[in-house]
Length: 277
Image (cartoon, rainbow, N blue to C red; front, side, top):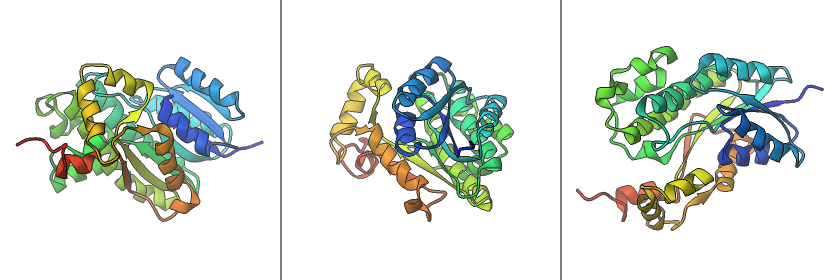
């Protein structure tokens, strides 16, 4: 029997929380660069009644993305995309961050947009980080949004001499994600589908706990202590937003980014997290 298919990239806690919230009754194709990670999450979900197929997938590689899509199409029409794959500033060098988080996400949104079913919906996960870098020019934003994917990494603003460090690379990648969602949502709309972005702040996951206990731990703890919410978020709270964006209640929302950071960005600009000049 054919099922509606959900593509999920990144076998982490955010991806699983969203897939568990809205993936019931669907064929879920779960891709991760480390297949054992996908197999672990697939077993957890299959043991409680979901239908998950783990697949090895490298977000930085177009052919790997196309293979993930082809795997999904074996089971039915692809109606949902959840892109939770990516690397953090402490996990990878500048080149890898740009290749995975920026280029890879752009390719994924482009390729899924070519085949997404009518009535379909997608979300990609960016970050609050994209909101706290200096504003880009309108021309730079348009280049991030509309440059052909195979030319993205050749943009002058993304060359090594213009990227300060891994955090700056990550911020540029996440800014690109948000602008790319805006541009791609227009193309998805031509197929009767919607595409949005979620920009989380500090969300408690095993990776985040490692960060809390690492060299940047005090920075992160200070951030969530001084944000209006006074705490980090949970993966299920991100899933709440995804459920809205991908369901009928969000039918008029497309091309948007929802910032879910407990007010940390607001505090950064107008509160106790504001950097000293």
